[in-house]
Length: 418
Image (tube, rainbow, N blue to C red):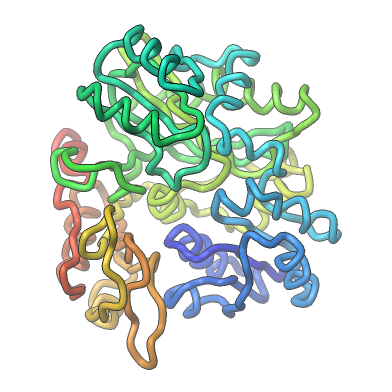
């Protein structure tokens, strides 16, 4: 199978790494990719938001499967253009991707499907926003209705900060605050059959102790030793299958990766948000634990034959990923700094720990930073404690001027499990 992956982040490097280990994959391409994906997949230049250009590249390469990684190309309809060219594509249609592209659309689908979620108001002006903020009280949860690369949500006790975020967005969803720990659960679906992956937890705040501004994610771990063993079955029955069924009923079937961001509240499981693609950095730990070859599963989903796929196999190992971010992330990150120590990790920590590239590029013989989140240092171990130790040992070998990372990824879960 010839596979083309679209995107340039650590999620795409994780996908490329897993696909490169799949014996069924005979050729692997990534566009536009980064310095890390180039080590396992042939790089190509393409505008990831241009459906016609992506379809033309896939046709030229003779791709048997296209995997669209990021949300923006999905919301722009890239998967539709690839399918129109007669090539199987893993990723939802433009219409179905509105599940992530519009928080208001997602709330409407959840209401129709009976999916448990936070009570909310859709607001388009300051008066409506003030009314909603007053109705719910602090902590205030204000979400940009559109795509915001994981940074469109403000959770604050400061009423003025909540008002300011609402005013900066064209349309916002203001909702009640959900207490309790958060869980990310991915599911692969062909629009009818739904196959859940293993749960993960990510860390959105920039600083240790869940302090600092929201980010795209500073680390993740899997499995969740504290979670109810019945959690996946419950979410399948109350969230994932009803959502997929509702979208199919509307004539906009969702085929691809359905990501449920969940809060385990005192009143039960509630959906915080849906995403229409693999999450970053959770993908890094979920795929580290997946034993089943990836390409066949994605192709079954793209072809509508997921019911033919045997149950997925998972490693007993735990996985932890730590994001190394550039100076001044998430504000205006500095780029162009050389990254050193990558060869040392490869020589001394493999196969248990490895580096997935996010915001990187080649500059001559050097690898330099090219974004806010630069690397996802990922490790596996017999348990979370060992996986953490291996991940942080590898992080310590990385040298990137002014870089930052959290030191407490999976710390509480590892301590509780030991």
